[in-house]
Amino acid sequence: MAKISSQLLRHIRLIAVASVLAFGAAAVTPAPVSAQGGPTAATSEQQLLNNLKGGVIAGRVSIPDKKSANLIHPAGRDWRTFHTVTLKWIGGIAILGVVALLIIFYMWRGTMKIEGGRSGRKIQRFNGFERFTHWLTASTFIVLGVTGLNITFGRALILPWLGPQAFSAWSEWAKIAHNYLSFAFTLGVVLMFLMWIGQNFPTAADIKWLKMGGGMFSKGGAHAPAWKFNAGQKLLYWFVVIGGGAMIVTGFLLMFPFYNGITVGGMELAQIFHGVIGVVFIALIIAHIYIGTLGMEGAFESMSDGNVDLNWAKEHHPLWVEEEMSRGTGSASTQPAE
Amino acid sequence: MARMKFLCDADRCIECNACVTACKNEHEVPWGINRRRVVTLNDGKPGERSISMACMHCTDAPCAAVCPTNVFYTTADGVVLHSKDLCIGCGYCFYACPFGAPQYPKVSNFGSRGKMDKCTFCAGGPEADGSKEEYEKYGANRLAEGKLPLCAEFCSTKSLLAGDGDVIAKIYKERVSKRGYGSGAWGWQTAYHESIAS
Image (cartoon, rainbow over all chains, first blue to last red; front, side):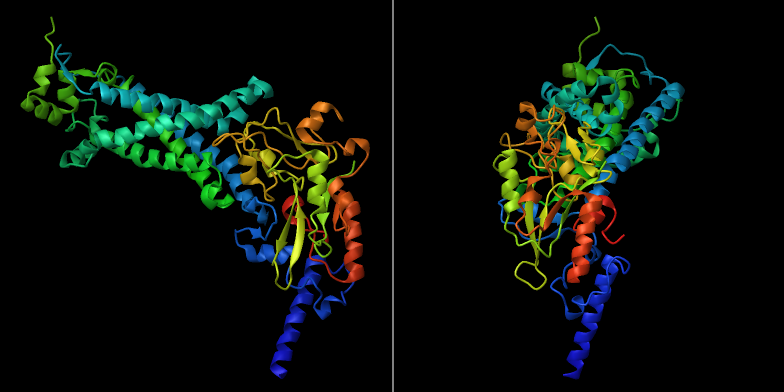
């Protein structure tokens, strides 16, 4: 009995101290009622915030919108910092960094030529379906990338010279395009995953290719071995499949907000993943576009009409050419020069 | 100029929802949108408290910071308002808001949230004070008529206080010192980086 009453006394003392702390000794005359365990005892904002540790202060509401039961959600401030500061740095460094590296690389290396010159013989590298899938994914990616960047960087970069009305109109259309083209992009990624998975498992040649840096950093023209896809392309493939898959999942979560009981914290997390993977994705694709166009002679043909010069193929994908030739498919699709 | 604030004295709130009803009626807020709601903590347990919550019109408002189209502005009275003409319904303000204030009408099956709607402290929007356009988009502009928010006016126990932050803080302090307890000015630390005692 004595033990219980001393415990009770300690509780009451704690409560009294807490309430004095909460309202300041200066502002409030020592509170006689709280010494009797006033009706407020268990609940004050400060106490709950102290116990919170990153969660939300939530209760019960009588309206149908259950997420409105969150009374205070201080973590929104962390997300604010992410969106207004962190993501801008990550995105700025990733994208401008890749562009700067490519400019330096181009100034040093120039366009990588077909060393043997053009043979005049062609070999089919990508068929119509492969090219359709590539361009379906690529064209939607560019729209998704630009409209996505608009959400993070538009306010600082575009709004000042477009003005509020025009910028909002553009952003509204950008949002609609971003939402709806996501379905086409999803289809592209799924098709790409199924279509090319067979040729994208790692092989011994990939290790050699990676050790040689793909032959990109030696002007002497050392060529690294590769099957249909070299190790760099395989890495991009897996990034598109896994990173693209993450973009699709988080994107749909953002598009169907609070789906299936997802909390506001879950929505913030989805946005964080979507933003970070997105800017890294854009940076990688900028490098991919460079190497497929300006960076290498004869590379773009593989995705334009699907046929590449035989010498290009031998230099960049020798193992694949041998395989094709031995199957006879390579020679079947070659055309005489004149 | 006064700095307008809300203060809910949780020791007085009886969860009658008169504030919610008054708000919905005054501004003709559509179905599914609640600019104000009453949250009950520790429901049915010792220390149960109900708090009426809406947009707190934060100092350095997080919604304004994250908005991709910069639709928010703070009036001379410290009220955070927004332009529905510029809002694209992206939902980011809801993620940043510590109080869950922004609301979005559901305009189609997926994706497109409508223009954000939230408590205006009964101060309308960017349109001309008291105009038809302003009423249709944002509801009544009581502040322009020299009146305070209707939710607080309606409060049956005078739990919800709205008005000049210094005045309502003084009222609350007097109450606390008179009755000897108070659970604090809910949301003030998060919204204004201050509590009543400071």
